[in-house]
Structure formats: C-alpha cells, structure tokens
Amino acid sequence: QLQLHQSGPGLVKPSETLSLTCSVSSAFFRSSSFYWGWIRLPPGKGLEWIGSVTYSGTTYYNSSLQSRLTISVDTSKNQFTVTLSSVTAADTALYYCARGRYLSAGWFDSWGQGTLVTVSS
Amino acid sequence: DIAMTQSPDSLAVSLGERATINCKSSQSVLYNSTYQDYLAWYQQKPGQPPKLLIYWASTRESGVPDRFSGSGSGTDFTLTISSLQAEDVAVYYCQQYYGIPLTFGGGTKIEIK
Image (cartoon, rainbow over all chains, first blue to last red):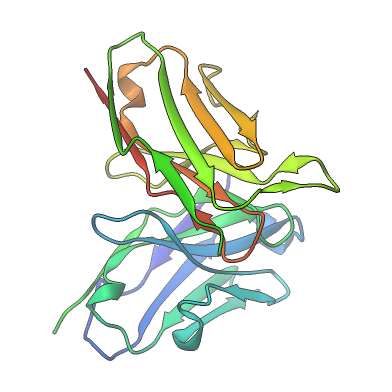
C-alpha cells in the first residue's frame, strides 16, 4: 500500500528557505504512470497547487511561486523535495505531498499527512 | 489561469437528505479530443489530508460510497451526496486539471442541520 511520509521543519524564519521532503514507500515511485506534487492549504483559504515533478525529473511549477520554487526528485531514495526561498508570513500553510495520476498534471489520489509550516521570527 | 468558484461556501443538511455542491470554472475544462471533463472532487475532514472522491467529473474513485456522484460538463459541475451521513461532515473541493497551474475551488463546508 502506498504511503507518503513528509519530513521537514515546522517553523521557518522570514526571508529564509522552506524545505520539505516526501518519502514514498512504494515501487510505484518509479512508474511513469504517476507524478508527484506539492499542495498547500493556507489558514482560512482553499487548496493551492505548488508544483509537480515526474520520476524523470521534469517539473511543473505554479507561476505565482516559480521565482522562489524548486522541486526535485531523488530516485535512489524514493523521495521528492520542495524548497521555497525568501519566505514570508504569506507562505504559512499546511503543506501536503501527493501522488498524481494522468500524465503529469491530473488529479491526486494519495496524500501525505501534512506538515504545518509557520513563517515567523 | 482557470479560476474555480464553488457555491455555497457552507451548507447545513439533515441526515439522510441530499447535499448539492456547485463548481464553476472560468473556462471550459472539456477536452475536445478526448470528450472528457478534466475535473476532480475531494473531501477533507478535520485533521486529515484531502481524499479523492471523483475524477473525470463523474468517475468515482475505488472505495468511495455510491452516495457520492459527480455531474456536469464544460464549465458547470455538481457534487451530490444523495443521503448525507454523519461521516460526510467535511470540506469539499473541486479541482481542474485541464491546464497548468492546477487550480482548486475555495471549498464548501458541509455540516449537519
């Protein structure tokens, strides 16, 4: 059964870099049938897609974050990572990793447990 | 970007009654070459990650109870819970995957009346 386990700090100082890693427990990670994404839920708001990465390393970013965003994949560890630089209070949110289906931009059928990231000094 | 607008923001429904949530996209998410609507629905309960309910606007994910159904095409979509159960209390989101960036609706909170 697929499991996605998130790790990373829950508190980041303003202007610093947020970094979260998602570890995938399954051989599905190597399948071209899936892709891997990051989504966040700011307090009091709706879900926001951050970006996605395929197993081969092709990335798709939300243009609103693109200048500060990097998503990478480590196939040897079955992990993918999001880094967001120069964070502000507006980046405070519950961050989720998820498995995507249908090409490289479809729906998300399995989600990590979520990491609450607070940007504060 | 394709904007997704859900209505209502919240909804109180009696147990056993029907609940209906609407989702409208700012442009059509019907892909002409496949005749598929690129729309999904999710359920998020407090303290849990979102759970996929429906994709292709009307295809239920495996294991999702058949009281959940999706309908609509083009720009207007509906999620219907035919007989609300206590465990259905949650926030529901629609999502389009017709274009990048992927975008979600603002969510609809369902409560028990």
